[in-house]
Image 1: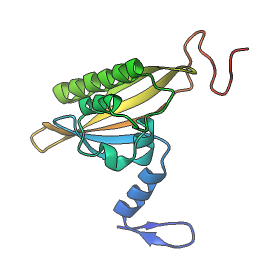
Image 2: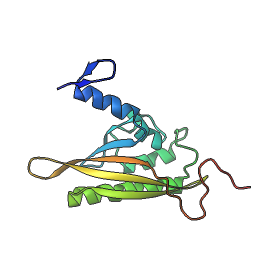
Image 3: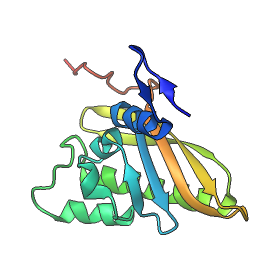
Length: 158
């Protein structure tokens, strides 16, 4: 099977999917049973203020270690308490999907220096032939929903 791109170029589905993931503005992260990042696209790594290679092989909880290391490129809008909260939310969501073997839609509330942001994330289990969860894919994006009293993106208090 191949895809016919505009201009007549034929590409294999795996190449097409890889190009899509690399260019997507949605954060896509794959986790294994130990909640270790197996793969991550650039948007997913950018959410954590890292490069994909910095995240692959790390568990969700090992992301907390980044807070204790100097010169880590974590988004300056994140404060350590906020990042700990987000990591806890991700860990809870992953545990639930691994345990219940069903997809989960989760809204992460992130308090940043410039206001509260919400990220809609869908956690989808990947099942083996026996029906056991072997991986979880998360796909997330910033939600246009704002908390009451939060500052819209791009605006400041006057």
